[in-house]
Image (cartoon, rainbow, N blue to C red; front, side, top):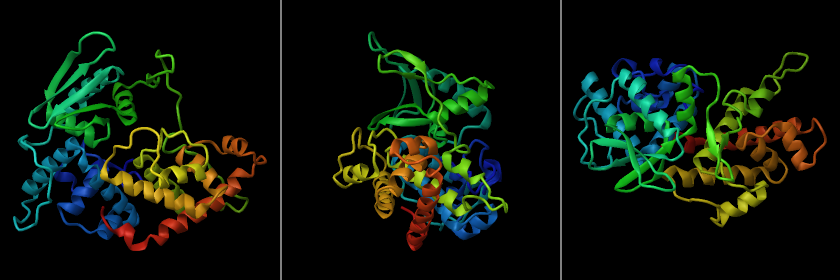
Length: 362
């Protein structure tokens, strides 16, 4: 989840002159607000979006600080920004996670382009892990085969691992004094783009334990809601308003942050029961924002009720096509897009009713 809704390019976001180009747009917004003291409304005006949209990006990085690599990366950038802009010492510093790792300067763009991509190539193997420890300045990539002893593949500076985590290219698997990470979907995409390949080389472990191609899903531009948003009537009026599309994106962000992508629950009502009883299948370990995101998803589905909640869950959260949702729900052809538009109008009003809560961090 990036800041693409209001930031056209990471290199143009404040405070661009003092930060490396590899710093993602959302992190720039976060540092502009927390370190440079720019208001949410000022950032929204600079980037042509509503202050609540800026807030969601900032709150996302606030929630991610429980990840030790993300936290230390933001600390490095915070120090670099304060030093470059010579901010007053009286500005109160954030309470940050203690670590014995010294805060050196952030890695350069060339290091990220070359060494990080080499690391991602290693991590593309499903048997590999990135290992970091609180008191070690280095990170290591190891292969852990089902049979045989672990093998060390690479050792590099910890700051490069922090850059990978800040960009969302790796995701934490186990957290502790020694934490492990695996490559994320965003990391595989970054690796493909860096290598200049158009062919998808993403692999996944099938039920038989063998490697096979992973089925492509909707991208951020080609989601079912984005497809509907391009439709227009005879007068040229769009089928969906921009506020409806944004509300769908917000719900999808909350759904992902709530760690519900791998949950195999068919209906909105069944998911509500699982959320209310805290009986979500799979791991329930997550960042502090996970609990709040699950509450927001639950509130939206409860507000929608059966029917509207089911089509919203399938098309906005799981990114299923409208036709597939119609068949699964037993609806007549071409009725799904109308019901989905009604549901998105309700979702839009729901997020608008949050009011001041949208303007609070955490």
